[in-house]
Length: 142
Image 1 (cartoon, rainbow, N blue to C red):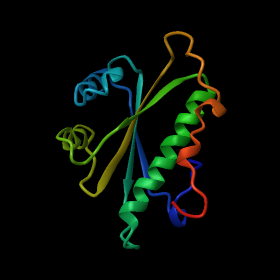
Image 2 (image 1 turned 90 degrees about the vertical axis):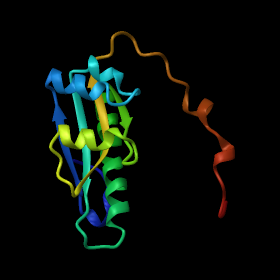
Image 3 (image 1 turned 135 degrees about the vertical axis):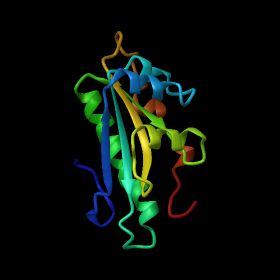
């Protein structure tokens, strides 16, 4: 995996899910995950704390998020469709995902990603300058 990580610790692990029964079960856990019912692949990005630094818990989320973003970019470059599916520890389905995928207690689920072939042509995206939001950029301080 080529992605930045705090102190180059690479505190990520990935689970590839291709079994239809498991994808279907995941697809109904969150109202936003319905596309897993048709996707041939779900990549679950997990992170773990090495317990070395006080901020390891925060770093593992940043590390795993960078890895997830790089996988999304790679999928797109290969002509695949991919979408980042968010997950929060506070949601009732979080523990269900961990149980279903047999994820150890000390490993945190950071994201899921549905991957597949687009059904048709993707809509043309706005050009970067059309999406630039100058009001969100600040100089020297907020």
